[in-house]
Length: 264
Image (cartoon, rainbow, N blue to C red; front, side, top):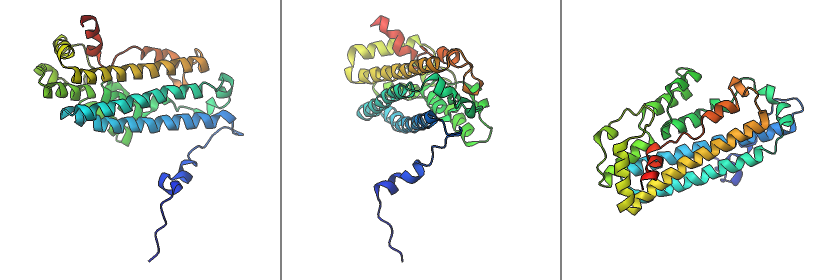
């Protein structure tokens, strides 16, 4: 019987395989294409971790575990700050250096990131029309369809409020989870009461606002980076580029938590 090889830093992290994943397509290749690939691969790794944290956050909320929920939210917020900071690195790439290899991307686009779409769906920003971008029966389509049909983070939060003894309206608890979130005056009344009398669960509310704001901040930095690199050009993969991204700004994930600000 052969002796198993000892676990090393390289073998545990599969460094050899990892470093082979950056395969520029441009001739030369163009110097900045490696940076472009690495940045977007790292984004996908962070999206994977955000989804992993959601897997812990949602059940923690449903069982009323405030401590575990706050810990998961803190980690997600820290990851979002890292995503924003990575834009600084990407912006060291000039428009000329990006255009030197841009045509090699063909129809590929960050718009096609199934992990980011899954993250959006699980956070409540659902659009069934996006499923058409992925091959029916494929793993990405199935994953997104499951996220579309599943309750969102907000639905887990409403269950959390119920566990905390709040009189959450039955209609909110049984809402159509495939529908976009819309302001609910009855839920807002519950939240106002919570803010005024129960500081610990109110911290969860504030961390959800932080999460919402953090995602909006990343979207803003992303759109400014695209404007800086592409200007008014059509985006990679045929999207409307910066114009499309601007339309995604300032749309809150959790409108009730924003609407109550003027009532507190």
